[in-house]
Image (cartoon, rainbow, N blue to C red; front, side):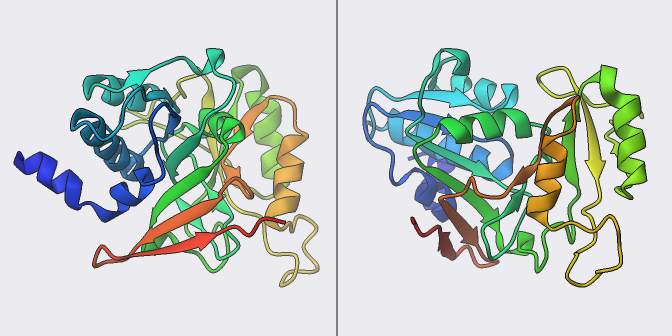
Length: 245
């Protein structure tokens, strides 16, 4: 084995992500550092003969490019009806398996692939666990240029402190869909701020965002996760698993 292959084989988080993948599956490839580790592990397993006839759909151009470079067959999501398993990362999560995603700007495509997936697995560092969702990460919202003014005004009225996501040259960052990203503060908790007219829990906030025209999608992933695999500082793993009703 090469050194890089050895490193991939020893990556417990990546190996756990691909453990349930079998021959002839359609696999959803997430976006971000943790997903990149799993993409490399999947490619290594295919290359070494552990998996055959695997196809994949990617949640971002970057993940698609990496997968193709590593020899994974990537197909278009627009031609795909179902995905057997998706592995992806998250920017923040809580004990109820609710997540904020979109640090890489891919939340719309990530949500579409999650919607199509029979099983979803999210890979996170223990440091991303939050007592209250939104404690340390803003909620990304993908918006149409046409709606930027009215949405910015509405977000300001709601006390959400909208911030345009910019690159290091202070230019707006665009998603792979060509749209802008606004990062929003999480509203105050209605349980601890009963007098705040703008207070909303995550489910209320999701419902409010879903009603606003001009929002393509957002980074609240409140019930998408079937399993969250958590890596601690020593590389050891623990899991949260959603109980089926």
